[in-house]
Image 1 (cartoon, rainbow, N blue to C red):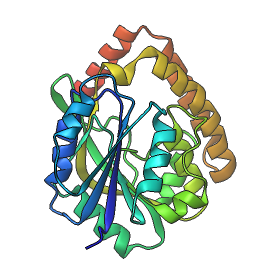
Image 2 (image 1 turned 60 degrees about the vertical axis):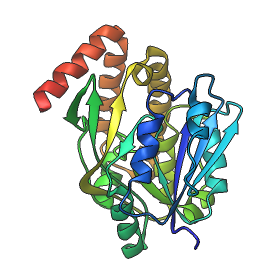
Image 3 (image 1 turned 90 degrees about the horizontal axis):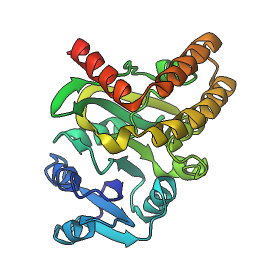
Image 4 (image 1 turned 180 degrees about the horizontal axis):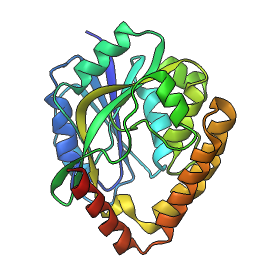
Length: 267
């Protein structure tokens, strides 16, 4: 029987966390899926770990390092279903994630992407997600000019609409998902489920200074594009960019400490 939803993960040097990511999918309450995993040029033990899995729902591809957006574009082309759920290789999903996403997308054909709330895992402790939650299409559109409010991990898209807008823009190294949401909102509605359905892991590789510098540069371009296409508050956009630039100027250790303080306050 053909699968009804595809799950897509691109992983590079993910030996520390890829087991937990894969196992969270294999233990889903919704079992009618295929799972495409792209080993994007890993040089650690990722290949050996992946090759140990024998579940027939897994389709594993080893490739040279393409970078995330190009790898994900390839992954989408390999998916056999119209509904494609994305999960980063260092995150993991709660057991009912696919069930909730599939049901919502089937019942709401006007929605072309749907994500969900998540927990953050930072230095062994769990915290609520650190950016404001928005739910419906109107709130998403209003927020896009000053923040990327749609979690990429735990998001499900419709392949036909993804292809219609040209997929991920490979010119964006880090903020490719932010750019994608804006283009998809030109085709239909977005939604974020008000239910915690996964765990987003924050670790050294996810908060490097180089990565944040690229993120700031790309975010400036994309937020201006969002303001032009979707509207919203110009001053909220300026305030958001100013805050991001200020945080980026701080030493990495101070930014890490600031995040810890914020999460302790939230909990």
